Image (cartoon, rainbow over all chains, first blue to last red; front, side):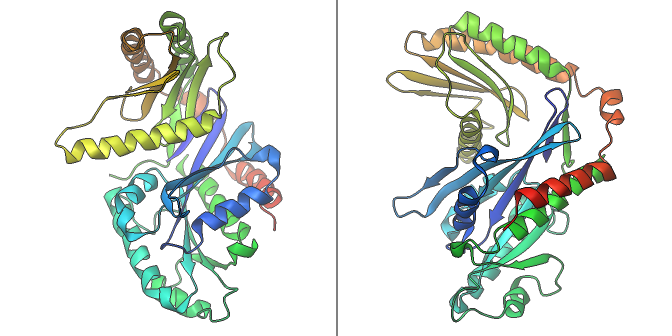
Length: 196
Length: 166
């Protein structure tokens, strides 16, 4: 849940990048870290294995700026995508205000997309949340692959009813990394207004 | 039960900062922080003589993750929770204790301070801070006066467009 500190005039929001292993969650964060202005970003923390697979999470704080006198910050997290680390994913998902689901466009990763999406639904349920109740957007990543599956087919596996905004991305090249982040951030901040 | 999307902390947080200052003085520690379980810093104090701390955001995030991990372990072992955590290195130590179901209190100390001293004064500080948080929910008149309506979202949208541009 969004934390509003009236005494310190701060609003802090948590956004989580979710998705199957190697879909590009950490790549998204690294690219964002490289491309945003130095004065708005904090230190990026990555808890990873020796072969650079996320072990627990990546974390990056970003300052949006002051909105109506409130310093507004986003804390971006990624979860470990490998199936084995579900306990860690549950912990990181706790208190998420917004989610970006990073789907893989590789032909042999569509089943992994589906499993990760179902896993997200399960883990949200454990936190008494439903997928339609949390701001969520989808990044269909790796559009730069020569054999990338058509976007409609990727979405057909995870969001057949097209309930969520989706964006094309090629995070390894820094493309399409800001559109989903901007969209989910907007939804999160709109939620603050509605909750009040 | 669905969690509310907004969590409010009120003016009492100022009093919390005073308690953190008193804790540092009595325990002779370097830094003290009140941390939201999601990993946000709610209040912090540093001793005047302490070196500049590393990134407080990063510390808070890692500590919250650490606490959440050990809480999961505790449940697997049949415990309700582990309420305190200690980490000690050659020169520096961390002591972390749960204040309530939303917040944690972290103290960083060096080798000049015995851990027993830190624990003693942290336990008192946890009680004092817990009382403040219970007695001082956000002043409704203050929070109601704030308009999170259209102006807020329009201002935020403009900043988002500027910050996250390709």
